[in-house]
Image (cartoon, rainbow, N blue to C red; front, side, top):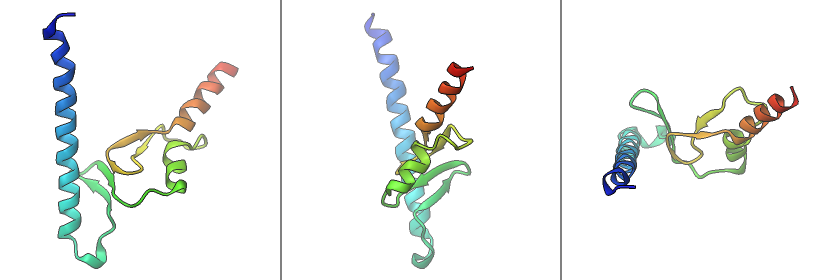
Length: 100
């Protein structure tokens, strides 16, 4: 593989990291600008990107990452900015397709 092709994926990863960092900063700024008694530390930034800076709980991890009965394959991250895959839903769907 040429050196030119190896740099492409690194640049994409760098851009993704920078965008994620920018979104996280925007979410923190949004929360800090909210009156202290109204801060929730979870919500949406730039209109559609979810964030959650609360301490993760086992229940939230299970709900977002391992819920085979959920209708959603992609859920908000347990901690941070963006989305995560509901692995339970993915495996459940794969099992149904294999059984069919």
